[in-house]
Length: 473
Image (cartoon, one colour):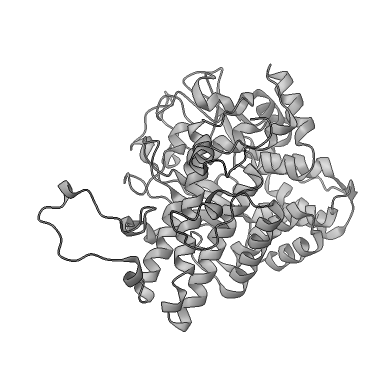
């Protein structure tokens, strides 16, 4: 159950506790809640913790001013790789696949502000921990720091140096809001936050931060930083704590299964609690005519390497046979009927959870940690983890060694369309090579500066000269 979704979070929106326009308040209120007096006990602070998850979830909305959270992440990750594209190469969405993103791209701007909204809400909790009971304070801190670390990990990988905001700040603190801080310093905060989360948290519902989620996320951070020994230890702590689903398709449609370490939860039917990315992956059932469509390169790769994962990863568009759709997140788990468009419930109000961390990823990270930046490994522990993932895919022929390319291929086959491919290419040091070749094959152009997104022009303008732009933009 995604029980924390049904609470009103108006009191912790970005314009927290600001007065409403007077025409909406008749008669005038005699009392008001202030930020200094509200978070006075565990129950009230917990509403702020729930607000963190709500910010990560985002708003199912067509308004460019609403924080969309995770619901647009596929644009800035998967569609900047060789895995997915738009159907018609139109509008802002097409900028991602053609590597022609501009600082005025509204999707980039929304993702940036949405992620900082999560950080704001995490800081709000952390700034009020003194009012929590001893028993609850540590858990609240762990959840808030997990969310803040997760948010900064995405920001620093996508934008490079970014402002470091580790407390609730006032509107005039522009030096904190807009001055970009070195990535190394951002990573120090990420590591520290996740270490605290590991120390403070235990098991929890899969849609909430837990010790296992913090360990898995920190392992990925350490792999990104090249700290392979620490990453290996964290992965080995998780071995056996979770289990692969027997049926690959069940990973995505048997919600809350034992493979899921952390997911962002949604519920179908309610605009305030649902998501629309599942519909956007379709053709004409969302608000677009098809985005995050599978490239020919990815389809060909999966046909050759996916095993039984292929049918659970993409399909031919039943309405337009020349197109290929992601099927890991079919709206509400339905197939859309014979025409690919008919759903029992509104596809734009889908309830599919978004999986952030799952056990198959940990097993492959374990192999990566043992490989430790090398070209091959025959380590038995690595072979066992690698083979466990392949066995589930029906690829049961035993392997005797694993190359760096073998591992990258396995991650692509296992985690296709889960917003991992772009980050994997960068972490493995092959993004320039792979994406340049992909751009050439699709009549586009890729350069090294395309590895980072532009800082949104809105932020540059608001900074009044304090904020610099990434090279190439």
